Length: 156
Image 1 (tube, rainbow, N blue to C red):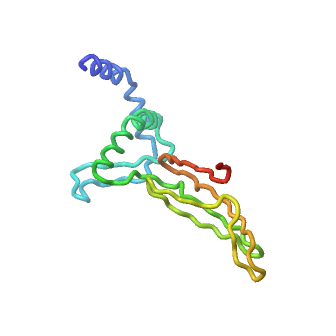
Image 2: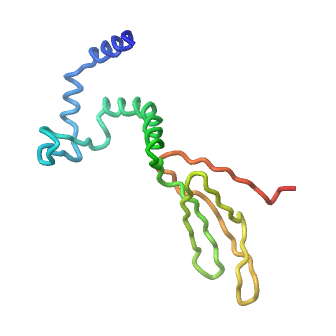
C-alpha cells in the first residue's frame, strides 16, 4: 500500500500545477455558492460550466467507473432505487382515420409486461378490425436497461 501511495504522490508532484490553476481560474463557472450565507462554513463552492476543464474532465472520467459500483451498492443497502432515467416501454397504436395514440409505461426492476407485437382487435361500426400496434423503448438517458423478450408466435 505504501508503494501505491508513493507512486500516486510522485504522479501528483509531476503535474504542472501553475498551468492547472491558471486553467481552473480561467474557466467560467455556471454558479457559485457562498458557503457562509448558507451557514456551511466560509469560502465558495463553484460549479464549472461545460465543457469541463481538461484536468477535471479526465479525473471525473477516471473515477466514475470505479465509484459507480460503490454508489449503487450503498443505494441498495439503503433501499433506494437506482437512479435510472429514460428507457420507458412505448406502445403506439395506429388507429384508422384517427391520430395514432402512444402509451408510455415505466417498468420497475423485476416486473414484466405482456404486449402484442403486431395487431390488436378493435371494435368498429363494422365489427372487429385489426389495429396495428408498434412497440419500442424511449431513449435511455442514464443507467443501463436489460430486457428479456419471449417471442410466443413461433413457439411449437
